Length: 366
Ligand SMILES: Cc1ncc(COP(=O)(O)O)c(C=O)c1O
Image (cartoon, rainbow, N blue to C red; front, side, top):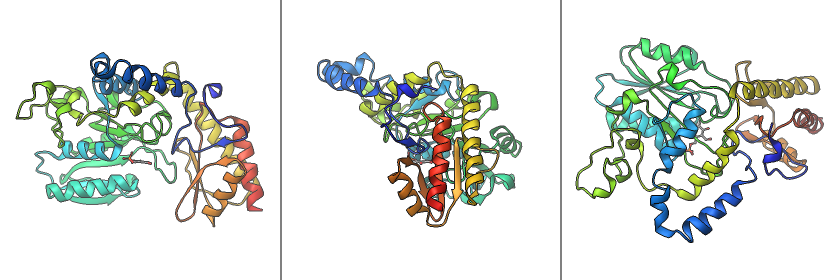
């Protein structure tokens, strides 16, 4: 628990860290340093004083939270763009004919998969993670580790093994699990993973996403967006594209340094976090909230036992109820048509927050 390190207004119970994490207090000062000193005083020199390598350096910091050894994660672009890179990389040169996509995926992943299908001629098949029915036609499976609507956590080990047993590759979207629980990308032999940093990692609105391409796949990974940042010699200004041999080939264009260095600062709070302990706290907080909601209301909790740091509740008039919760200082969100979502970031949400939020919800429902 590191609540004192975060800027959360007095009187607010913040349960939307699964959408936009709260800012660690020191980030504002660090961003000022980036603007005033690194940009204002050092000017162009800052590119060779750390800015250029920032996507790999910060990628390694994120990788530590994902069970990825150094040199396999790079930070940049959005999750949507990284889904595109990963899927195109996975289906390159395949003889197989289908992309299997989590039926309840966050929409952008499905939209991007459609683009990949129409560019490559593969077909999309939507399937539930519990019944993927992979065949020798399946080239790649695109899965969300935690469902954005229900908070359900998928079994990464079993589903990765299932994909590999069918000779398919797997792309995991970790948007709702990075910073929630220990993840073992290297140990599980995951092919590709992507995710955002503005939720539980507190990187700030629109902070850059990440992509994981393991060492074993880097030489054959063809980034469909062959921008100059991924070139083996970006300042050689060569007419033809030759990718960097390593993870740098997953980069595209000039990184958004202000956002990226805000994320870098935010990651300081993660340096000494034990993810196993954090996971215990996340489970305890979500269990407490779920129990109190079930005691005090007859609303249906749709989050299953196997979950991330989120509890979702089915509720008629979800929008109006959430507006009222927010008016009373409990900030969560809702997803149409009838789901209230409450995210529990264990770094700054307390047991008392969980209990009070359930009580306020019950008062409103009554
Ligand atoms: C599972 C998942 N994937 C992707 C995204 C968004 O991707 P982007 O950062 O490209 O907007 C979200 C955003 O909430 C998400 O929950």
